[in-house]
Every structure is written in C-alpha cells, then in structure tokens.
Image (cartoon, rainbow, N blue to C red; front, side):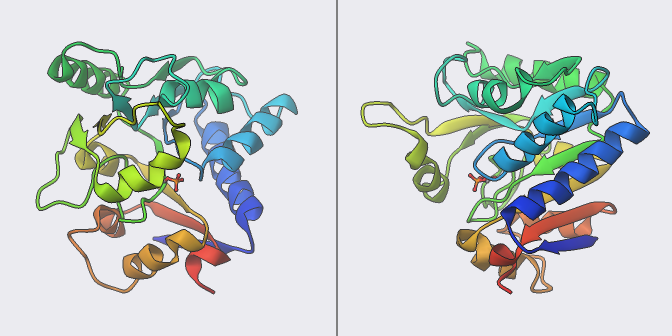
Length: 238
Ligand code: PGA
C-alpha cells in the first residue's frame, strides 16, 4: 500500500495524472477503470492538458467506467456518460470507452453484457476510485454482503444527499444505479484512490485507523496487493 499526501487538491491531481501517464507509457493498450464525481475533475483536466501537449496518448487504451445512474437517458445532463464526454472522452483519443447503459431495458442483461466486455478486455489495469463520505466505492454502498460483479445498487441516504447538489429543481434524481462489483474492482492490477477535501476527513481517518471495517467498502482495498491512495492534506486531516 502506498499513501501519497499532497499539499492541496491540484497537487493530488498532478500526482494521480503522473500515475496515469506512467501506466500508459509502460502499457499503451491499458484498460483504465474510471470514476465520476467532483474528485476526478482536476485529474481529467490534467490528463487533457497533457494530451494536448503530446505527453500522453490514449489511442490504444480502453476505458471502463465504474457506474451509471439507472434509469437515466444517456444524454441526460447528469448522466455519467455526459460527465465523461464533457470532462474527458470528447477531449482525448481513447480507442474504446464503456459505461453501463442507464437506458437499458433489461438490467440483468446489461450487467451481463458489461461484465462480458470487461472480461474480454482482460480486466482493469489501473482503476481510479473516489470514496463516498460513507466509504462506498463505485455505488457499492455499506452492506453486509457485496456483489462481486456488476449489479443494480440502491443508493444510500448518504449518497443521495451527497449527489443531490448536481440535480436542479424539477430534475428527478435516480435512486438506483448500475455499478461494477467489489470483486471486479478488486481484480484491478493497480488501484488508485483519490481523496480530497474536508468532507472526506472523517471517512479517511476511519479507512486508515488500522481496522477492516466491513461496513466501509473502501476498507477492502487495504488488502489489495497494489493500491495507491493519493489525498490532499484536507482529506488526510493534517
Ligand atoms: P465525489 O464522489 O468525488 O463527488 O466526492 C466520490 C464518490 O462518491 O466516489
């Protein structure tokens, strides 16, 4: 386990971008697992500017996103598909991108399709993760048991509250989502968790207090053989 504490958010995004840059330098055909939310925005901006400067190339890389609201129109302003197009996919040159389809009529078939595509791609080389204030990874919310593969998740009160800020009045906020399972996340060869801000100080403290809290899904990462936590001082509480 590697822990990198940066002075501020910008620096943590640069440190995370360095890891992506090195990953693609070593393996241009990498499968990158990507996340959404506020945290990766600065990282994606870094990747876009490095791409524009010719310092990183995604032309042989494949992206798999962790999750997507369900149901949601793919072109909805708050869909994760729209988010990824806006912040990254439309601005760089990925060979292929995959996001669970929030418009699929059959949830089970969509999860099976997504899992088969991920398996055919050989699994994830580098998985980017954020952390929920409740410790969720993807939309794997605190629970007694966790799905290994993709499934339909019911968003916790905590996640609904955290994400409500993105939805304007009159927009219906989905209460369920399609998410990669804990098993698929854990199967990534390298996991990079980016943590930022004072709203994450409490959960970060719990994550690193030396116990495996089974109701904090992010704690499972502590058992992973190749995980890097990049956080700013605000999240680290120092
Ligand atoms: P946030 O979300 O970056 O918007 O805090 C992180 C997450 O829920 O994984």
